[in-house]
Length: 463
Ligand SMILES: *Cc1c(COP(=O)(O)O)cnc(C)c1O
Image (cartoon, rainbow, N blue to C red):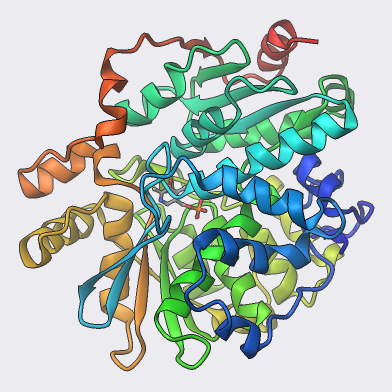
C-alpha cells in the first residue's frame, strides 16, 4: 500500500514514511494510491465487535507491512485503554432517528484523542525500531494541541512543540497544553490566529534545511494516519445502526476538513453512507465554496466554537484531488492561486463531484447558542458549541427516512462558558481531570515569525 501526494510531484511513500513525514515535499498531502474496499459481508461481520477489533479490521489494509498484525493490534489496544467509556465512541439518540456520536471520552475530551492516542503509539513503535527521533511541530486551534501533548508527553524519541493562537483558546484547552511538566513538551503561544500558526508550520516544512536538521514531523490533521484513525468510528456507528443493510448519513462539525474527509474515505471503502454534511460556524469558507464554487479566504472572526475558527481548510485539498480526477498539477495550480491571491474558483466538473459527495450548511453564533439551549430544554443533553453547529445543520438538512448521526466532537465541559451562557448550567469536568485548575502552567510566548520560532525549537530540542 503506497501513498501519493495531492500535488503529484513528491515520491510515493509507504504507510510508515507517510505517517512519519506528515506533509509531502511538494507541499501536498498524502492520500492512498487506491482505497481498499470492504465488501458488505466484511462490514456485516463487524456487528458486535469491540471498538478495538473494528479499528483493527478497518485500518489493517492501509498499514501494509509497517506493523505485524500482532503489534498493530497491541498498539490499538494501548491507544484506547485510557478512554473513559468502554464503548469508546458511544451513541445517544437526540431525537427520533437523529443520533449523537460521542467522541469526547478520551483523555482531552475531544475527538482528536481518537487519532492522536493511536499516533503516539505508532510513532513510538516505529521510531524505536528505527533508532531515530523526531521533532513534532503542530499548530492548533486548541484541541489538536492538547491531544498531541497528551499523546506524546514523556516519550523518548519525540520532542513536541505546539503553536496556538494567544488568547484564542479556552482555559481548559490552554491548561491541558500548559500543565504537563515533561521536558519534551512545549506549548508556544503565538501572536496571531490559528491560520498564522498553521502558515508558520507550513513554512517550516517548506524549509528543507530546517526540516531535515531537526527531523520535523507533523501530526496536524494533514497527517494521513490521523485521518485513517477517524475512519473507524464511521464504521462502528453505521454498523450499530444497521449498515451495510441500512444507509446512514453523517453531519460533521468541520474546520480543517480532516474528520469529514475520514467519512469520505469510509464511503469510498464501501460503507453505505447516504449523505456527508459539512457543518461550519460563521467562518464558513467551506459552505460558501460548496454553494458558489468560489473558495476564498476572508478574515477569521473568533467564535464560541474556536476549534472551527479556520479559513484555510487544509484537508479540503484531499477532496479537491479526487474531484479533479487525481490531477496533481491542477491541485498545485489551485494552491498557488490560494497563496498568491487568497482564493480560487473550483471548475464546474469538480464542483459537481464535490456536491455529489458532500452537502453543507452553517450556523451563526446565535443559531449555535439556540441549538445548545434546545438540546438541553428538549432532550436534557448538554452539548458543546461545535456539536451544536452539527445539530443545527443536521436538523435542517436531514431526510427523515435515513438515520442521521451528528458527530459530538467535544465534551461540553471543554467549552463551559458558551454552554453556561446558553443553558444557565456550567458543565463539570469529568472526575478524572478535576485537578486541572490546580496544576502549574508553563507557557512560552513567541511572535508570529518564522525564524524566531525556528530558533526557539532549535534551542529546546534534546539531541
Ligand atoms: C478540531 C475540531 C473540529 C474540526 O475538525 P476538523 O477535522 O478540523 O474538521 C470540530 N470540533 C472540535 C471540538 C474540534 O476539536
